[in-house]
Length: 243
Length: 249
Image 1 (cartoon, rainbow over the protein chains, first blue to last red):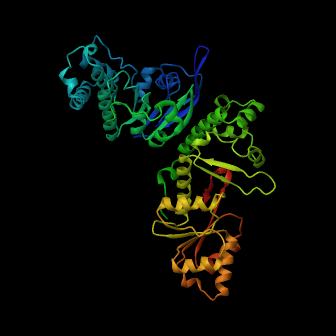
Image 2 (image 1 turned 90 degrees about the vertical axis):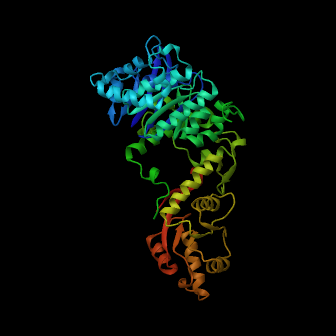
Image 3 (image 1 turned 30 degrees about the horizontal axis):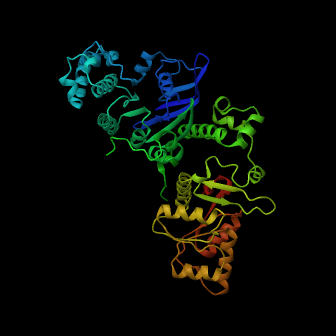
């Protein structure tokens, strides 16, 4: 579905992405892991059109999307739940969802149906639908960010660091939600610093270091890989929320 | 014949080329970082993986790694991981030079056994087979390579190793071997010995002969198939690229 070929991105003189290639097949969860500064969010921003690449190609279902503006990337079928949630704090939950469905604004019936479906999936959002998004807890904001992305009916859902800043139990819930989305047939590109949690649920993964991919493979294989263990998981580390 | 990994073995050409590109890029990034031989060699030709390997055809820009390079890196200089992560070491025989040494991590062994399982499946081997391996069990890759792939499929493995031809024949009879793994010339030697002791292939349970380890002719294949009453397939592997499992009929 998504093909990224030898992409280079610069921030000024800083060479942030150095020849990165990856692909995501329909129905997969593919995860991108790596420490701070590895280039994961830069790659996401490049795919979503928010950062311009200097070399390389990106295609969605065989059609080039290199250089498209972010709103057109959304129209093509890629939606992002960004790092740090970035919900519209001064808008209600309902308004945030409607903003997510902006490209379908001429079809209010569809928007209503989609909102109802998301309220069924996340009843807490229905309870709080008139509340300002900025007053939600971290976990609730993450559910809202994911729901907002789903409102555009994307082919590919990109989740950038969904566990960032969340308590261990909430993180477990979020990863359960991601797995449920996969079981529904969603295609997901998951960016995570929490490598253990991400690799446990991913079909495949890519490990980034200093702007390059240094390892790729099946999620559970990478979980056992010494180089990933050493660099990102800590020797013998278990997360608090893994009971 | 069942396909061992249908999703991977049947992937589209486009996805195959993309996967090859990604894996080669990741490998080049890793060896540039971890293997001084490759870092030196790439610098000599002014090649930087992140800039100069952007599509599969760029493989033409890479220098060959030849047997001498690996011999001169004896024993561990080519390894891209610390020795503590290497769980198996194999080596070629090395007559006049140092043997070519290859190290395998746990994941490498899993990958290798899957690749061998693929070619054994393609050659007809299934879980119900009794597979007799007449390659040497030692530092050479043939014996253990086929062994782990056969176990991966779930076949019953007879690790008889090399030689003792009459014993091999007795085991084939008594243990009802269905798959014989050997060099083509050894298959013919077995057929010759069976003739000399008056044993017909009709008294054996053989179905397939997985041949490897030397080049052979179509005449040899027909002879093996006719005398042992088997379907004989050709298989290829070299120590420097894991061992058996690189290609098979």
